[in-house]
Amino acid sequence: MTGRAAVDVDECRDVTGTCGVGAESCVNDIGGYVCTCRNGYEFKDGTCTGSTRSSSHSLSLSLSLSLSVVTVTPESIALF
Image 1 (cartoon, rainbow, N blue to C red):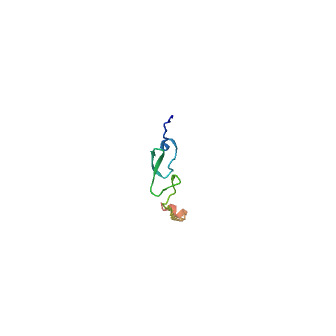
Image 2: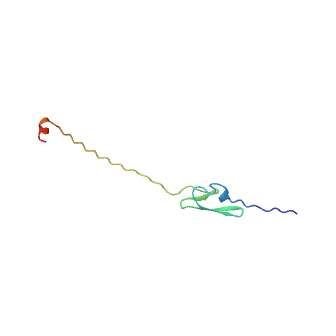
Image 3: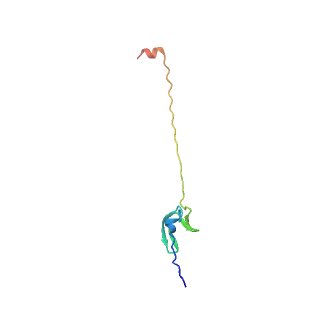
């Protein structure tokens, strides 16, 4: 009987985005890989997906405009 040597594929190194954008780490294992997901992400369907973090953005803008009207007369110019 002739045997063949199995070759392990390093999915973490050879496959871009193996664990997804939410991955903290990818560790190659014999015949597979193990993903560790960042906080707020879960390992689902072979990848770190979804974010359970809520995102809230608010913008507050305050504008104050002050307008002064000055009337210039020949008499007021003569005072300078």
